[in-house]
Each structure stands twice: as structure tokens, then as C-alpha cells.
Length: 69
Image 1 (cartoon, rainbow, N blue to C red):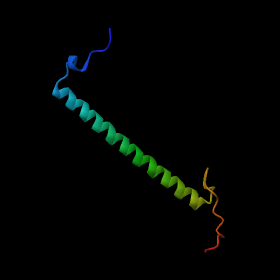
Image 2: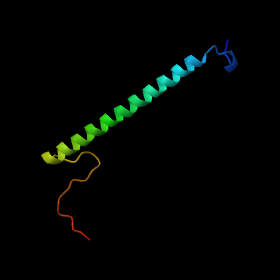
Image 3: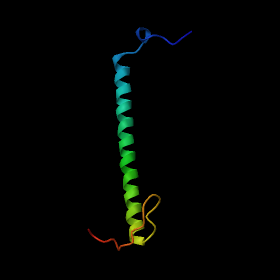
Image 4: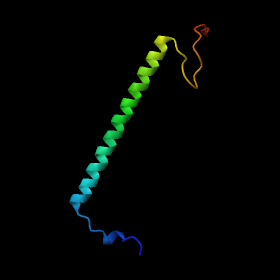
């Protein structure tokens, strides 16, 4: 048979709260993961620029002789 309709669910407020808690924990974990990845990318860029390495894909190399104007 098909899946039960919304009225047939046998959930309680407690399990809904648990689902909300789980979603909040997952959201926080994703945010923390993104912060960590951004910090790693910044560190890589800083390390690469101090080493004189290439700037990476999609970025033009800095020649240092651009004129202002």
C-alpha cells in the first residue's frame, strides 16, 4: 500500500522536538564545518602568497607592475 497520510502519523510532540533538536545540531555542525573550511582556505592562500606560489586556478598572477589610474 501507499505511505500513510499525515493524519495517520503516530508521532508525539517529544519526537517532533527531537527532530528539531537534530536539525539544529546538524545546522550547527554544517556552520562549524564551513567556518573550518574557510579558515583552511585563508591559511592556504596566505601560505601560497608568502611562498610566492601561483595564485591558483581562475586567478591571474600578480605581476606587481599594474599602473594606478
